[in-house]
Amino acid sequence: MTGRIFHASSGIGRKVQAEALVSSDGFSARYDLDRIKGIFSRPDHRLAGLSYVGRVLVLDAAKGGVATAWMLYEMKARCIVPAALVLNRVNPIMVQGAALADFTMISGFELDITKAIPSGALVEVDPTADRPFIRLV
Image (cartoon, rainbow, N blue to C red; front, side, top):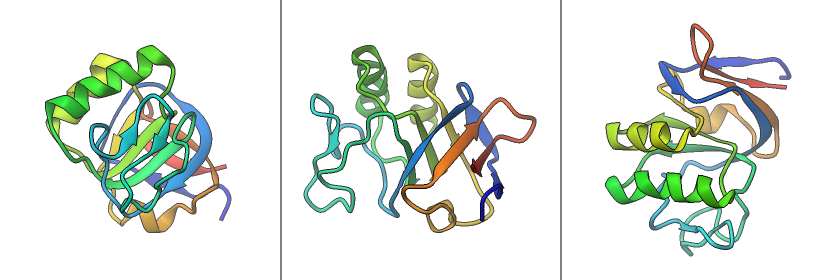
């Protein structure tokens, strides 16, 4: 499975490499995370109790609006931030938040990316490529 590449329709940020943390749950920086401790804190989230710091989060869809977007900036400023966010679906406000925070994010796959990437895998995310992608290293 090493070397498999999954292309996204859009991306922002810079190339990163880190361990993937995967769930079919959505992503809200406001409701799902303890942004001080750097863990998923919503009890019914499948990643509850796990650290997101320095990991590539591979999740289903962006949830929330403006608060989630500006929280990406706050997380980046505190250095308590994921390495990247990889989503099946994203909303325009999340893209604006990623741009403001200079945060790496890709989205829009032809398959469910949460089923294609195993949790714990080392991945490379390149939003700067002609076709943004996530690759199993």
